[in-house]
Image 1: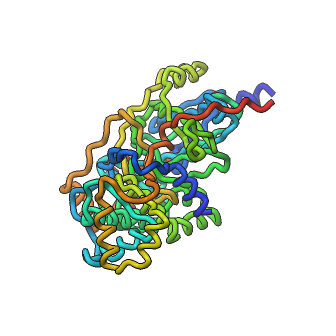
Image 2 (image 1 turned 135 degrees about the vertical axis):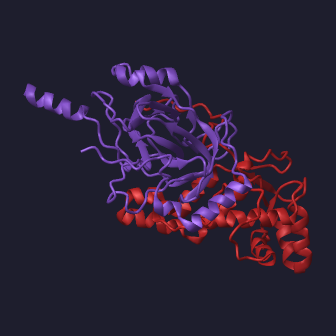
Image 3 (image 1 turned 90 degrees about the vertical axis):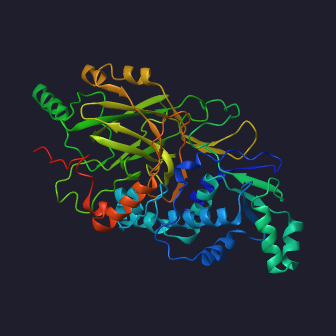
Length: 199
Length: 256
C-alpha cells in the first residue's frame, strides 16, 4: 500500500525532455533554512557518504549552479524532515507523539491507524519523501542513458564521483530524462476533453 | 409526532461542544447554532467537468501555530483533561453525483492549516502538505470559507502526460455565501477565509508534499533567532506534550 501511494504521488512529477529549461525552485523558501542543520550528530563526511547513495549509476540530482556542498546540505535537511525529526521551517522536533507522526492515523485509530503509522516509518517511504523534499527545493532527478550506465560500471569510483559532482550543478545535465516537482495537485493542469457522462 | 419533531429540531439546534476531531459535517438543512467558543469551516466539493464528475474526495485540516510554523498535535491526555480544542478536521464528500456540495464543520476557534487531501473514496488522507501549505484563522462566531476542491482521479492530460490525480482548489465565495441562504445567522457570519501561504509544519503524513496556492500572502519565515528560541523552549517544556499554546488557544471546557 505505501508503495502504491508513493507511486501515485510521484506520478504527479512530470518527466520532461532534458532540453527544457530549469523551472524556478517551487517556493522553496518554505523549506529552505539559513541556519545550519541543528541537532545532527552526522559529520560532513558522513553526510557526504550518505548523500552519495542518491547519486546512483542510473540517476542523479541536478540543480543548475549548485555545488556538492549545497546538495549535501539539502540532502541532510530532507533526510531529517522525512524522518520527522525536523520541521521544514527549520526547527527541531523534540518530542515523540503518535499524533504528530500521523494525525490521520491517530484519527483512524485501531488497526488501520497502526498500519498507517507503520508505513510512515518504512524505509522506502522515507526515501520517496526525501526525494520529494529535494525536488520541492528545486532539485531535479535525471535518468542517465543505458550507455552511460554501462560506462559507469567500468569507471573507477573517484572518476565516477567527480562526474556526478560536476553534473549535479550543470546547466545541461547529461541523461535521457529529467523529472521535476510540480504543483499539479493544487492547480489543475490542462486536461483532455472529458468523456461523455455515463447514462 | 409533532412533539417528537420539535424535540429533534431543538436537539439538533443545540450547539455542539467542540470536538477534538471533527469528521462529521453539520447538516445545512437543519438549524445550526454555534457555541460561544465555536466557529465553522465551510468547504465545498466542486465537480465542474466530466473528469471530476462522480468522484469523491476528502480534505483534512490540523490545528496550527503560525508563530512556530508548526501544527499543534492533539495532546495525549486531551480528552481526560477536558480539552475541547479542535485538532483535526476531516471533511469527506457524500454525494459524488452532485456538481457542488458544501461541508460545514463546527470547530473551536483558532488557526488551522490545510493538512492533506485525497481524491477518491475511503475517507482517508494519506498525504501531508508539510513542505508548504495554507493557513487561516477561524474566530468564534465566524463561518470561514476555505474554498472549493475538485477531485480528479486518472484524468487525461491535454499534453498526453501521465494520468492526473489531484485535488485542486478554487475560490467561489459568492456561491458559498448563497449556499447558506436558508440560515440567515450563518450567512451573516460568513467570511471568506484570509488564506496565507508559506505554512510548513512537521512532516508526518505518509506522502510528504506541498500545496502551493499562487498569489496568496505568505507567513514570514522563521528567523534564526525564532528557530533558536523554539528549540530552546522545546527542550525545557516540550510544546507538543504540554498541548497548545494557552495564550493563543485556550483550553476550552466542554459545555455541560
